[in-house]
Image (cartoon, rainbow, N blue to C red):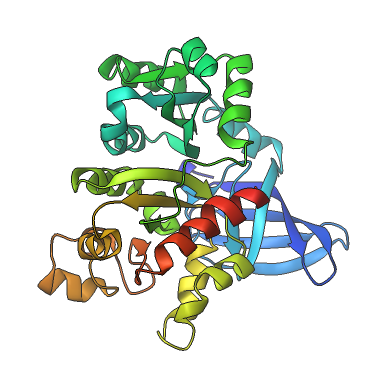
Length: 336
């Protein structure tokens, strides 16, 4: 079997809300023709016959990833066989990156450097460190903490740090990584203000295509204050709740929900004068086709594919800014 026709096997878990139990499956992905199949481990039977599933990107396949297959949200918890383990071993290098001080205004560009080198951001959050922790880590109190991995990850991390030495710090020691995971991602506190704000949600398809960094940098370059940022995995029910206002209003509502629940998204709270209208102007109309013609410099024109895969969600109504921020940085954070 050629490298391009590889067979990857994962152990996947699905929480069945009706039975209130976790079900285990073996997920098999064939890279040559982008087909998948699933086996029910407990009942020892085929659950899903091999079929095309082109919307699943191979970049989404790693232990710890959350993917959606035919509306079922699966968490990949382990490799399923030795060949898959060996293949992904080369991509197992993990490090933590802190972007701080003057780098806060260039965070999108720094993240784009990672994407360009095929380093995957597995988690990210904007945090306010305690003074003692900031001093110990030699960074500013407000900073981005990123968990990342990829082929030759440590080498690429060192190269990135050498280009951004005054605004980044790289950590590869397991004890340091454990500490940063704890203070960065296991806390329910957030930097969100939840007033006079708007929310931009970078959608899974844009993240998987390496566009999260450029989108974040566009917001920064437009003069928005990024007051909170985090990565969130929405269940179908969570996505339905968040997008409920669009139900019966836009014909693509179901696809919007499916996209937002398909993989992790980044929620970004921004502040500016007239934050909601300003953000809408930068993002552009929902339909990228309209953006291409009338608003070619907008985010959705550059990164959108259609009305559901349009790069980002942005707050539409002034009164919804604090509500959307609260949804992510209070409700969803408490579930993390």
